[in-house]
Length: 274
Image 1 (cartoon, one colour):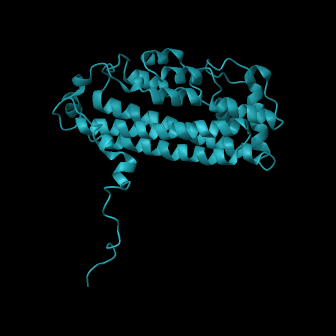
Image 2 (cartoon, one colour):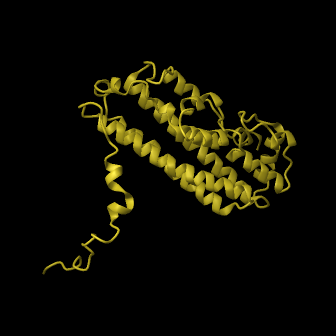
Image 3 (cartoon, helix red, strand yellow):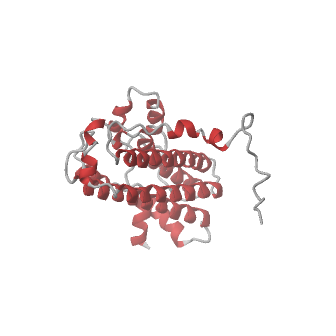
């Protein structure tokens, strides 16, 4: 018996929008341009480009969730943060593919991209700013590019955590004015009163269910961010050891130091206080 299940499928796309047209696959698949003949350079490029695509989605979801939280709308924001978490998991898993590249494989083409380095990723820096890790020095690689303005706005704007604390304040919990009106261009500093506010949320989950759920979602986001950083560190150490990074950083020590950053400190402190 002949299979006729496909006979009604559209096959003429000379005047219609096709799958490839919609996704702009020609441009996407032409974006992998190795600088050497090394076999593994294609792997290296694809993994990092895929990471950038996931980061684009994360920025889209984060900024939308933050806009909703600023308006006091929680449930749709939680859905968006859940999507951020799933995208973060995909980013972490992508390092597993890159670990199939040995140190010798990498050395075949590492020299070709000069001082280019992942720490120069504009999207990664924007995600850090949105999550509250504000480091003005890290904007310097982008001074010559149009995205610098967006980074600068994010630097001086409330982070995801700042907006969450404003929401706690609007829901009747005591958040000090010096926290609510702080200099957002500076890294957040933990405050005992904020820890007390979160403690009230965790001790009265039925009363503050939305805030409790938001708190746990923020912890998910930070935990996944840490896991991505750890997997990145491990992949780099496995590939180049303790060589200096191509962008001039200390390499592994720089990445290890980044693991010490805590984005939402009181949400981790509250576990001890309960």
